[in-house]
Image (cartoon, rainbow, N blue to C red; front, side, top):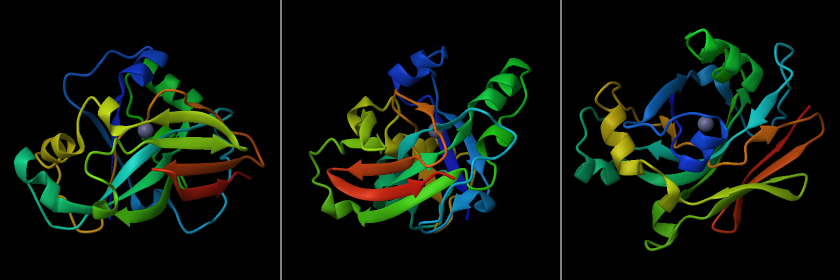
Length: 203
Ligand code: ZN
């Protein structure tokens, strides 16, 4: 499986990192070795002194597809969850300034925490899918899908122009503002519509 991530999908987050509002989705990929399984702890890698959390709504692909039209995109996923896109921000800033790819900063082992998924049908249609992140019980990020610059269906349509989507692939749909650093012994918990779907301890 692969993980497809969207960057700068929330205007306030793009602004907090001094990035322009994109005209089309910013896309990068994490390999399956980036997945942090089960409730394993996350170990801060020694190549970064500023790993940051990014809580994101995730979508699990349930059909093989390429060149998916936006109006049919909803047929390609029926499970929604939360994920943490851990980012070595110091490394990313350095790579960005040199115009180099972000992989070392974004796709390292353990950088993709994938929480539980719930059926899309359990999320009320008119709900905004409010989600938030607690860092040691303190709310540090919150957002909802109405703030997304590109909707999930649009994202699926765009990325499937370039990458065949396979069953089990996971899309990270971007983070709202409020990203920040993590420290050893932090406990990070993600909630979607009031339900805790993710919990990670930092080591
Ligand atoms: Zn992200």
